Length: 78
Image (cartoon, one colour):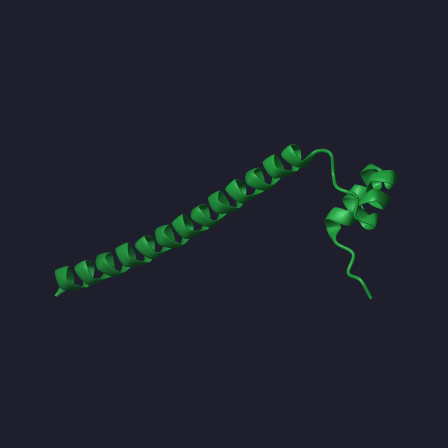
């Protein structure tokens, strides 16, 4: 049983004939546009990954700041 990918569904919805050509193994005529789309998606994926790492770093620094503040306040009260 062959897995149907979301890109195949999108291709079918956009143009039934294009989907049929892809299934038969005919080469696409818009290779440069497809390459540009792949590059755009890779760039977006990298920016999403970087923003996730920065968010984790920010939460870590916030926790560290709260720990330092707690230690400072505890020492001040003693």
